[in-house]
Length: 108
Image (cartoon, rainbow, N blue to C red; front, side, top):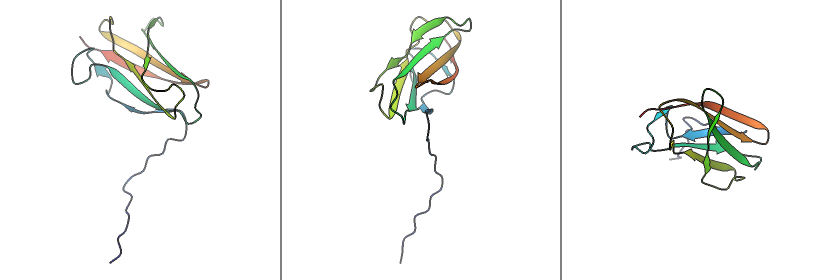
C-alpha cells in the first residue's frame, strides 16, 4: 500500500514580512501570558532589521530589542512596554528600505 502526502495548507513568505507575533494586538507589560510584544520577521535578503515604537503623536517611545542576529533570515524583535502608559502605539519595523507597521495596545 502506497502512502500519500496530503498538503492541507501551505504558507510561503517570499519577502520582508511579519511571520508571527505572540499577541493579537493587546498586552499588559510584565503580565503573563504575554509580558512582552514579540514579532518574528522574515528577512530573506539579510538586511539589517530595526524596530521602533511610536505613540499616536508620532514621538518615539522605545527602540525594539533585537533578540537574534539582525541580518538573519528570521529576526525576532520584542518590546517590553516598560514605562508605557495604557493606550495605542505604533510598531515600525524596517529592513532594506522596506517598512512594516501596525498597532499594539497596552492595557494596564
